[in-house]
Image 1 (tube, each protein chain N blue to C red):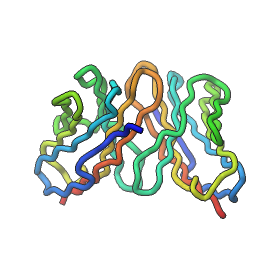
Image 2: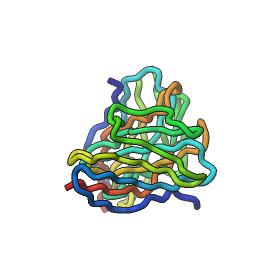
Image 3: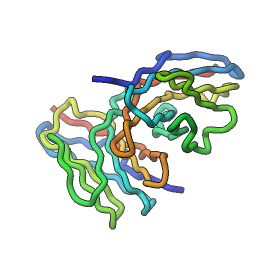
Image 4: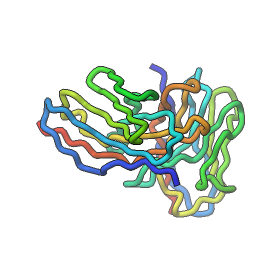
Length: 111
Length: 113
């Protein structure tokens, strides 16, 4: 069973701090990695994706991928109360159309 | 900015009834998906659709489920005989090409009584 694991949280950080969200996956054939944000009662919203080992930055967000360790993370700089949401990690294998989601980490940014 | 739309936003049905959930993906997208999310649980893949056929489906997507793209814009999910455990939020998503992420619609909350 191919799994994507995330700590359910909540992860609490003060406003202005860096929030670090982590995700591990079991399928070594995974090629594509996605981070989504989901507010309560709403649909997942794509934040960013990463395919290659290393860091990828987009505004206040940085995705980090380490395929050897089967680990992907999302850093949120200068966290704002509006960033309070559940962050979902999703993984896809190049040989499949299927995306597997983790259960998500709930982030609370304290004003 | 183009977005995925879904109708209805909430559907209440009795057990054993058929329901059709409708989606309009982003117009230049080629890959279409249905997911479900039971309250408090994770987003679960149901089916992917490309080039007018199912490209992959999960164990959840049994004979009670079907998908269709009846015209150039709509993408539907039919549940033939609903069960109580089908109560969930159903999300449609679309993706432009082989790279990039999926964009989700707002969802349809299905309640089976």
